[in-house]
Image (cartoon, rainbow, N blue to C red; front, top):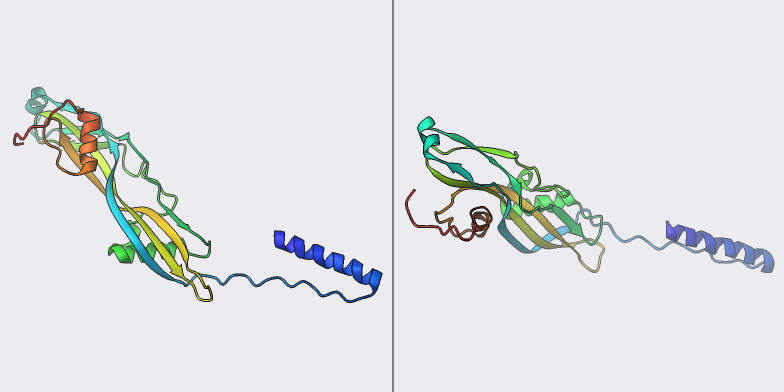
Length: 212
């Protein structure tokens, strides 16, 4: 829009000059727009994946009386927010389609594109706020941890008619995960699970190697 206003001003001044001096004035011609990159080839540079903790429940205690009451006891674990992951596609030019980028990334990851979080979507409230778990009459202090498998990738786009490639980045996720943890038992090696254990069970709740 700004370029159109400038061109109009140039033409208007030219018309005034022509009237005063009776000499033809060359008209300004708009510069050609940059070639579109709607069908450019997408090349993936780096792709990194990791699990991130998004919710963890408070500790739910199952006592002897709960075990006696019913053999298969169901307990509710309210989800408490830990962090938010927001899906996004960022490019150096708007002509690059988010849909094409996600479809290409899905092919690279060998997953269905419907599994990827769409741009603008967040992990908040993607799952139910209350999880019910069958603990099968086991005593102890339990925690439910939830997370997503985050994908972060960088790419370039080779466009017909352009001397330089466009570039962009993606943040999304391609799956959900959950872990039922028992305070006092080793939470395993996964960083997101250990984080959930530490937040809910506490660092002073030293896990033991006792069998379930």
